[in-house]
Length: 102
Image (cartoon, rainbow, N blue to C red):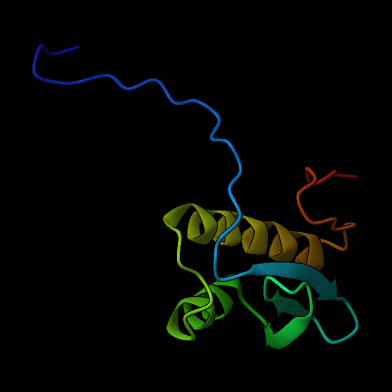
């Protein structure tokens, strides 16, 4: 590696609750939609975002002010993509679990 490049070794980040709240994600295979229910810190669903593609959902989460931490935004991006892949490939989706390929 060139001398001017700084190598950073990644490590797992400790989970931290977003002060704004959290999302419960599921797929609706019949409608071919992803559903993201936003829960405030009172653990009650306040809003549900529905969409066909991860990008439209995570941009809506950000636009609506439902995410305040970059870590949460990154997690939602990867989680929504996983839900999308499960929906498109008729796989079982469980939030925060690895996607199991058939």
